Image 1 (spheres, each protein chain N blue to C red):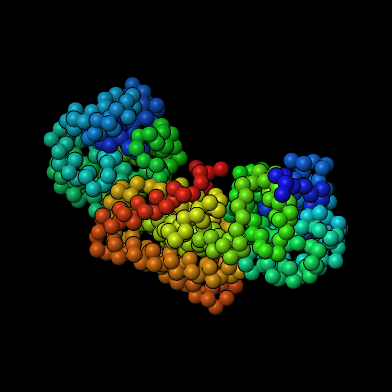
Image 2: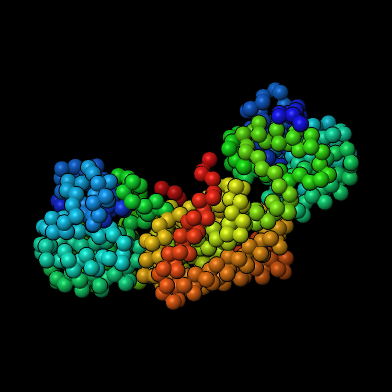
Length: 290
Length: 290
């Protein structure tokens, strides 16, 4: 395996949102004319907004993907498979198809079936670089710098393709991890989907009865609930796609809250301190801010 | 009432932690020689750490508080009343006693009883400027700039004293709010104590079974759980002091999570979108970051 595999000379990005738009900006900013970047969007207004971000902006799937060396699906996860069945005929043999979706297990088979080509490998990516902001207006060329990007290869992926994809993200500034789609979905349910769902529940519990409490907030509340400002449609799709793992994680957080309630009811200061201390210690596993 | 009441010429701060230490730094930085700042700490090591932060650093409660125009309790809430009974004899008539604690309802009566002087008013303050950091090492002269500071006067406080305290925090850069101790505890349970407790529960649910999931985290998890890095002893005290309100808030967040679980179980995308959208809308009541 190459320490640095080939970097693609042409990349088709489908979806000009925060991740897709940032990817286009990063590719042009870091590699200039060395990579031909095509950015596809369904809506004209979205294309307009992304003017200048890529070598080609188009709502024509064939123009966007024909003979591209890599295709990056950056749309909502729910429409990725259907896009793949449309674009499959335009791809040249060996084109690497990847995505930047927040769920993997439920995507692998539908995407491969939609592509329906043994000469076009699919391999999932998940750059952990989203935020509560959405759309091209939030896109930044440096979004991927120092972000973790998880690759989810399986036994059907050739080592050379895994290397190509890893090189791609490494050269965009990411730190890469490899794991199975199942491991990805289990871990991301815990460290992304769970906090998102709970942040929404906290905002509702905190403010529904009396929104004026919001006037009192400090940075703690603002940071703890920032992700609850994310796009409801996108997040509804993600939570449903990873439903089993999200339900398991919500079950665990409910148990944790029940344990806390019992400790408070019996006024057990020592147990409360241990509960909070264990959380603080576990949190030390989280890498420092990038 | 004066638009700007008198600013105290001497302030005794008890406790050199994040809030007490920052208050000393802010007073010296903003008012220099115009205010005599005394900073009391029980432990020599804490005094050492705060060297240079005040005109007087001492572990002698009498030296710290004698004839001070204002006394600010910045210790853990659990020891405030006992400190007040010790320092009461040293205070001159009219000294304003306040605190910076995160709970008010359970403090008012014990502090007033401990002071046991009708000529020394007590009036609560709660600057919303804490963080997961603790100790003088985290103190900053600009900590209070643009922070909300809640005052909790009641019918026993003279309007002139309320004005004095409000002027104090306004001139330190805070935005002030006034409400009863009960309203404070109810609102702060929702926007501070609840998110703190839930962040700890989320960290435990997310990482206890598999701490390696922490490697995958992005900024979302880091921000959403930052407050779970706070001092366990301090927070155990706060949650127990405000136990009834915290239990009510935890009950509500459990109901919210149960509702979410039911929506996910029945695969109701439209209801899920509405659930998340309502949270996002409620969060718009939160003032922008300072």
